[in-house]
Length: 171
View 1 (cartoon, rainbow, N blue to C red):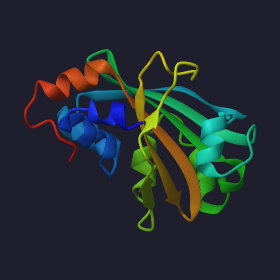
View 2: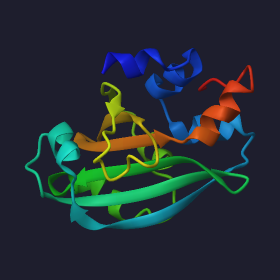
View 3: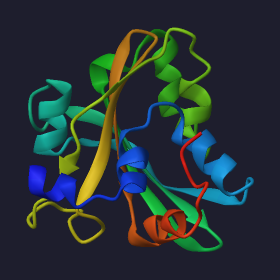
């Protein structure tokens, strides 16, 4: 939906389209004062739009992680990681066992890691996470040759912060 994308500020667009480790970018932005919390890590079903993005059948069994990034107690980013069961093999099997570790810290150790940024994802009103944000960043990472989907939803307090700090760009 182009109308929504044109409403994005240059800063918002930059964060929604940047490549690299969001973990690292948030640590740089906050001088390490960012914390993340693991909400869940379990076998579950992918949402329909997630299955579509991963090219797997809807209701496929996936390893699901949901995490939140907090800055001084305020939730800034909510992320969902969807790993198809078929990707949980060889080196990629460790992704179900990383516990509270940040996924980015594991993924970016793989020198063969590929990141494909998908078009910005618009959450329509019926989407389960529509109350959290309206637009999200999606990437397909290929970790040790296995695909996984990461959806990063940047919440209003995060964008308020970056708009108020001139040098708050992803790096």
